Amino acid sequence: MKLYVICGPPAGGKTHHGRQLAARVGAVLLDNDIATEPVVQAGMQAAGLSRDDRDSPRYKEIFREPVYESLFRVAEANLSHLPVVLVGPFTRESQQQDWPARLAARFGVPVEVHFVSCPPEVRRERMERRGEARDLAKLAQWDAYLQTAALKPPPFDHLLVDTSG
Image (tube, rainbow, N blue to C red; front, side):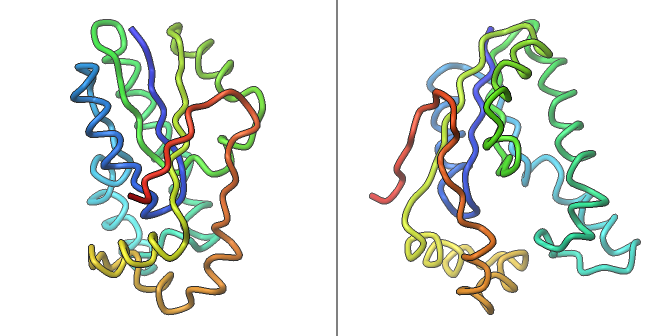
């Protein structure tokens, strides 16, 4: 079995690439947005926060770790019999040199990281086209958002996937 991790900026093409990869290798697809969105929205609303906020310090403080841990637990349950494609931004983790080794130690399988990206103007166009409420704040303050969301490729061996075209 193998764990494939798809990371990169919002609207970079992670979900699309993850779906294609999962189909090609016969893997379980665990996408952060698909798997956790209803629970996160309900929790945000219960906490008195915007259901669609994914960038505030408060969201990250309350939900970031539990969301990722939930994905990891579902991945663990499947990796004994199927490969898994895990999709999420993993912004902090993807910049940690030892992250793939820690994942391999936790899951006991080889890990392959794919960094998915495209130019900011393509990402903006995708956000506008998909019309998700969670993108509205980003789009309204695009230049400021870009200053906080400038992901660089990981400092470890990874597959770089350009989704521009």
